[in-house]
Every structure is written in structure tokens, then in C-alpha cells.
Length: 177
Image (cartoon, rainbow, N blue to C red; front, side, top):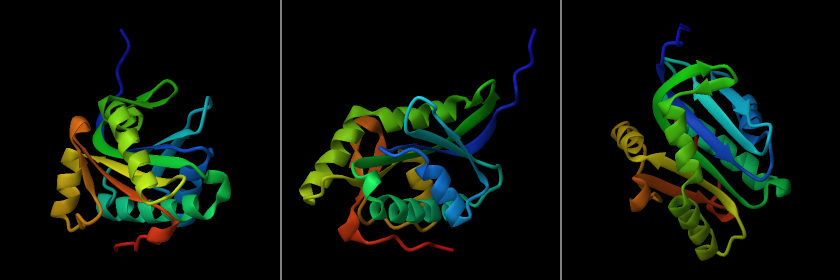
């Protein structure tokens, strides 16, 4: 019988973008070293999990601001980049991280209703692409309770999530400390 690694509740992020390495780069430039990043060797999907005990509000707001600057300033990143964020149980797996928390976060990043809503919002703004963030209902409620403003967020009903789109015209988010 093999022992299963204990599961630990962590903040999970998945970035689906046209250019590989954006999540790792934003973590490095923004000083988010407590986010452990793993790239999918088959594409431009990056997964990140926070160390236990991290300030989730500061990590979330800072990471979104850093990714927004990084993605919208780089012409190679043109297209729609989507950051999915949730919390849940994460386990060490043979090839990195696994667990229900990451599975839900990956499902948010792949959800057709969310991708369609992000694309629709980009087209409404006249943008060819941009950067969108999707957060699960539960985490959004927690972040709102901690003071994250609701302005700009849109409910995506079929996905039980909240979405916000950014483009070059929207300007960078300000970090909260």
C-alpha cells in the first residue's frame, strides 16, 4: 500500500495564455516567490499554488496587477489570456501538484461559458484580446469580505464564477497592501 501525501488547502491559479512563461515571469517580477509555478510542457498553460499561510488578498491583487501589466505590454501575448483562481485541497503528485482545488481551477480555465463571456467582453470594448480573471463564487465572496471592490466584475451563472476583463485602455490595477 502506498501512502498518499496529505492534502493542504491552498490558493490555486491557472493561466491559459498564448505565450508560455507569463505566470512565472509575473511572479518573479512582482516578488510572488511564495507561489509555486508549474508549466504544462504541452502548451502555454501554467499552474500555480500558494504556500500555506500566504496573504491571499495581497497575492491575488498583486498577481492580477502584475499579470495585467505583463500581458498587455507584450505584443507576443496578444490574444485572450485567462487567469482562473480558486482555493481548495492540493496534494503533491508524481508530476507536480494535484487535488480537487487544482481540478476545479483548471475546470474554470477550460469552461466554455467563461471563455465565451471573456471573448464577448473583449469584443464589446473593441479589443482583439486582453486579459480576463475568473474567480469561483466562494473565493469571490471571501475576497469581497476582505475589501476587494466588486466594480467591473460580472457573474457567469452557468459556471458559478465571477469574471473581470482588462485591456490596454483599462490601465493597470493598483496593488493593495
